Length: 405
Image (tube, rainbow, N blue to C red):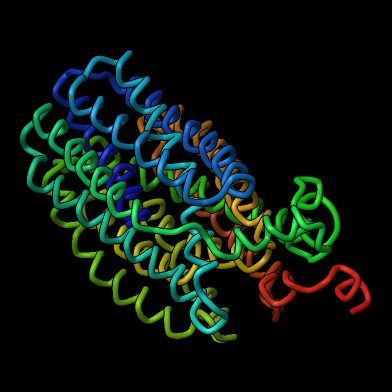
């Protein structure tokens, strides 16, 4: 449910902002600033929420995050003035950012080696359901101007309320509780002793952290620009309407669902890397289509379909799996939050200028984004294609045993 709510808010606000902008409530510059601000806030939330989740528990953090999302989306529905939206976007940006690392850690720590990657990928499918909900809102409310934008934010707010109520039934992670108990007892296990930020920057955990930072930051810069500004690009560059773009883009979602379910079957096996390679090629091609052939309704929709299908086998899906597998319990959400934070800051810096760049040279921008995505995806492959074990395999071991091994 966490990923569902997050994606309803993240994707929905892109459509809602365009409706506010095209109705005269906001300027294009306001859209760029708000998009950038929400991304920076997400980064702050991911960094702080991840660390707090490792120190004080997953459950405490993910209850607070949902409250922030509800307040932020509620304010966005009630007000269209730029100053109020600034506050609202900070709140739900921090909420969604902090929510991601603790929710993923809770999921992975409730699983075992036979289904951990499957469950993490399933959370991505819930995100697809959230995207679908946001797009359905775009179809239904896309012709209603400011009122349509308000309704989209109201749907996100209602989803957050439901998510909060459901989370009241979720217990604290048992792995986290056991690790904290070992810390208090002075037990020298890997998960009890490897808990400081310095442990992420040196030694065995440095390579996966820096690899994930490079991989996910580069791909996120590309994917978030095309994702968050997808509706903006379709309307302002390709000449489509909000409702028509939302309706046609729904065609990509069944394929994404099928791709995700298919990938779940191989996600916990060595066969996942060949799928990653195929997905990576597809993601890069999705940027080259409009860069080479120009921005028309056909090329925009084709690129969306390709990146949606291909992304099921790589990008964020594999980042989440690799992060959960690479770090012990008291560093897991810290590492996840750090990777998210750095990537979102980089994307936010570009988001400020994206509307202007799309107005000047959209084909050139997408060509550069394709090259950036390709670089990140190659780094991910080189960093993890030979990995055969996970942090879960050794985190309960005594430190002396691990050092001896």
